[in-house]
Image 1 (cartoon, rainbow, N blue to C red):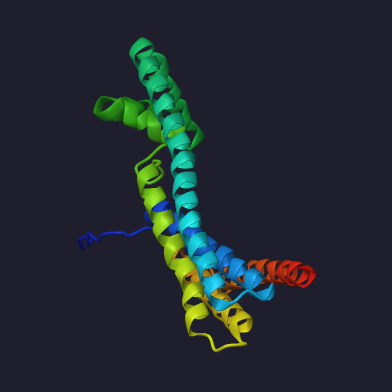
Image 2: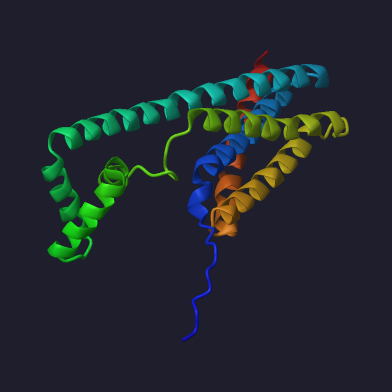
Length: 233
């Protein structure tokens, strides 16, 4: 009888925490900074003023992303901890009822009642709170909220994304700043969308098209506003 060869499986869900924050941060960094630069440039500001505005946008945006992610994910973490504390209390006070509740969850997934009760009993003997956290509350190692990781990832990826349009401001020839920043930023965005989708196991073409469309819309809108206000001034 042939032996089953043991192999390590790498699932894409392992990446979901940091991947979401990284893609969101880099995308926001490119879109917001490029849009800001294009809008200011359309108002006929000089290159130095555009760089100052763009750099300020980079710093402010990175800090905003970090703070927003930390607060948001911390709220999720607080909710998880509160639910776990409540579940631990119920396990201490009503262990039999909680075991039966777990068994009924397994029945709903296709096990017979007798087998479900055996599984629930063995899992609770091993780690009763872990079993209920995973199968009743939907909390696992993969989905657990990590506020600091999310904040740091978002801030760093925003900074990297925002730096790309700023580099184009420095190297773009005079008179071509707006098209150079726009085209380069759209290129960065579509590449980011494709890479993010591919890393997450999705269709890279669809990811690139989605991100590119919204980036183009944002830059077009801010360019129109900048041109209108610049002409008015």
